[in-house]
Image (cartoon, rainbow, N blue to C red; front, top):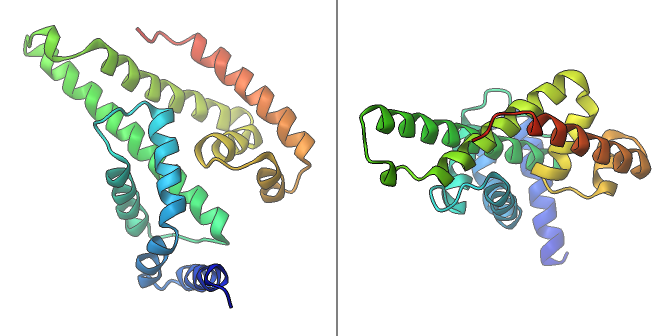
Length: 194
């Protein structure tokens, strides 16, 4: 067995243990998927415009804690687990953006000099929250489009991988991806982000 095959075998074994309820499996699984998790965290940070306030390692650690606290952590396979981790990271970045906005509002209420509360950080945090709200609306109106956005945008999956996960053709994924992006662009365009 090659080193890659050994790692893949261990990943499958720990995913099976995780699905069976063995909580120690998560502790063994994360180091095996560290490269994938770092890639996801970097993608999340770039897309969330989190700047230097939440580093890649901190985002992975926060996601670990969130996954560990989950009482219903079920993972069918590697891609499903990574998708779950990407969604956890998304939620962490959204919570982080909300707390930055709240802190900034408190500072403004306390008559702190505007130079200490940069407008760019406020806009970035507000944009993350707006994207989350638009995605929630999309999930309510077209769940498959929302799934495709989560897989493509947040988890970084290719059209082929998304097609396999959803059991549809790549052409359907491509069409839905374009339509979902257009829908989100319109939804975000109508928001009052300063």
